[in-house]
Amino acid sequence: MPSFALIRDLIGPPTPTDQVGPTAPITQAGPAAATDAASPAAPADPGETLETLRELVAVGEVLVLTGAGISTASGIPDYRDTEGRLRHARPMMFDRFRDDPEDRRRYWARSHLGWQRIAAARPNRGHLAVTNLQRAGLLRGVVTQNVDGLHTAAGTHGVIDLHGRLDTVVCLGCGDRRPRLEVALRLDVVNPGFRDLVDRSGDRPDGDVVLTDDQVADFEVVACRRCGGVLKPDVVFFGEHVPRERFRRSLALLERSRSLLVLGSSLMVGSGYRFVTAARRRGVAVAIVSQGVTRGDGSAQVRSFGDVADVLEHLTAQLRGARPHQPSSREVVGLTNTGR
Ligand SMILES: [Zn+2]
Image (cartoon, rainbow, N blue to C red; front, side, top):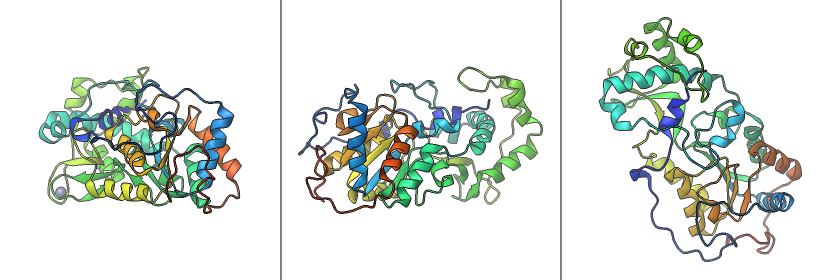
């Protein structure tokens, strides 16, 4: 199997440049919202949880934030276990990628193999359910921490790819952006036979590819055709910030939302967790559907530990024909009053 090292290299625990600031006090909190401990809220009765979730989504104006957990069913493994810990270490830092030609060569060699599986991945039931919620007019927007492009492939419009997209390559010199496929084909031309290594290298249990030093040393990296600059997959590396404008657009959506629905994210990355703290500050209700513990569990008014696709399909079935409407302030019982 090709490597997913590139994804775990890119998106991991909060880096010093990606930490959240102090959070504002809570004005109206659910029973679990007083703390933000790493331990999960006690699993509620599933039926009750789903009903509360349905009520929350039925009022509409939901901002969806998704993480790796929604793409695992598409064959893209999560890089964290259910305790929120990274399965691997050794992330590729941005400055190492930019400054060290050998690190860059190693990265591109593994990423070139890993890309094949990303490119072959297809949206799953979870992605399609998000599209259905959008078509039902219930969503304010969709923000994803994933770099696989599967929400857009599933027909969801206006997705904000917080951490970028692996199917695009950017030049660090002139800023030119090119399709990943174009760069992959150029890499194939200058590295004949390299892709066959996937079949010969054998699988490790974690799906990583073992490349020998010789195999990496022989790999040739290609440069920008316009300026000869360094090419990088257009994703946010460790040590990089999410582009300010992208983050601003995402938070602007949150401002206009009644609720934040987190799907399959451990929220261990600061940029994801900031949505929860921002929601809390603004009195926007937080619902989390994720099988493992998340950093936002203490802030969630609704917490489901169910399978993301199962929960979403249940929701869309319940909401079929539902149209967003203006609820009375008491309609969403037990949820933080959004004040809208
Ligand atoms: Zn360039």
